[in-house]
Length: 121
Image (cartoon, rainbow, N blue to C red):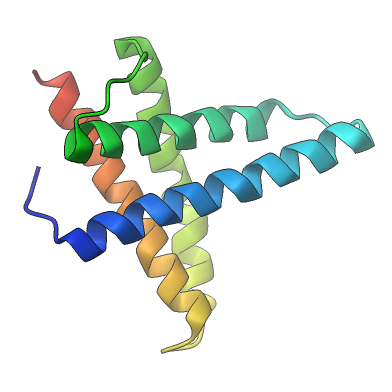
């Protein structure tokens, strides 16, 4: 994986943690309302795997995921890009939201790269 500054590593991990918290809250609300939770569960699993891959790559933390888990997570994470890019395009230059979205996209890119690096071993 490319050389990533400590600041970017920390921001990427925090971005994943934030996305996971938001997804967990959304899942709880959807479950309460009796809504279909298949998609949010799939995304939440992919986010957890993405975070685990970054922590594995940068902090040598072991992970329990199979190659199939990684392949599925990679697909789901890549699938998040179009909606984030769409929101990013509509956000104001220099706004906190835009900064957050930039960090989220960078974190997702790094996680996909970590999965690719691990899959190629």
